[in-house]
Image (cartoon, rainbow, N blue to C red):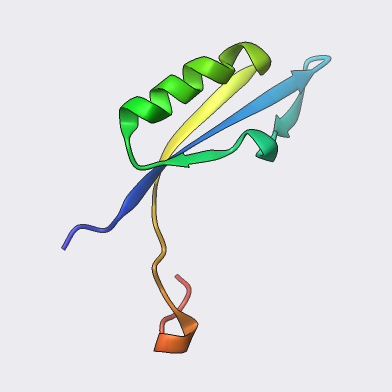
Length: 69
């Protein structure tokens, strides 16, 4: 069984040569690489950098006896 994954895209800034961090208001999660790439292109001029990561989707439920991990 394949673990479900998502593509996270987030923009960030560097101010006066110092790392300022990512802007979580820009964070979007996608299930399609081409849509994630399009969003990255859309926001790239608004930020100093844009990070893209493929991450597993956690589908654990504490009520169903799942654990975080």
